[in-house]
Image 1 (tube, rainbow, N blue to C red):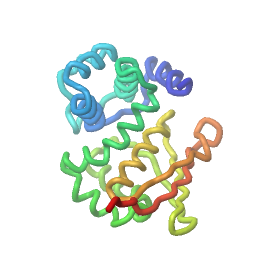
Image 2 (image 1 turned 120 degrees about the vertical axis):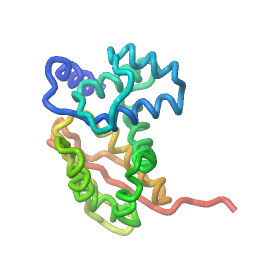
Image 3 (image 1 turned 90 degrees about the horizontal axis):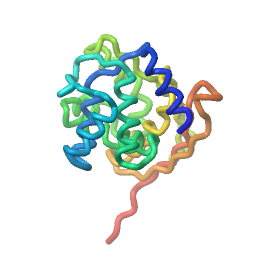
Length: 204
């Protein structure tokens, strides 16, 4: 929580990076879908965002996205980390329905395969979004059910989003995931997660 707030205050002064409108549209869609249009309007007002709509291909300062997450946290009465986890889960299906389904399918047929191909997918996306500065991932398989995932990003405080993303990908590939964060960006310059993945139990 403290890291997120401190980074938010830094971004208020001057943002060095941009986030494409697709991300902000996904935040909006998440809140409108899971809560209501009225809640979204409250979030937008609290975040001091006056844009009537976000354009997917337009670049926006990072601080807009951070402000939206911070405002959603206050309006919904949950932590910023919880907002980011929910957003990470939502992002997988959202990008699929926004026209990136075929690209996601190219990523692989299993969770380990997809995570190993994430950097290549970001390179392909970067051919469309010229100013994209994506994170990078390193995925190592310890055994059939255990992955070590390292996340490198110039953006601070987004480890909860990665946790949500991993859960969302688990749903996509029909597996349960248990995630333990083993390294933290503020001390190790990267975030690392130990990911156990196994087939979902079915009820007969």
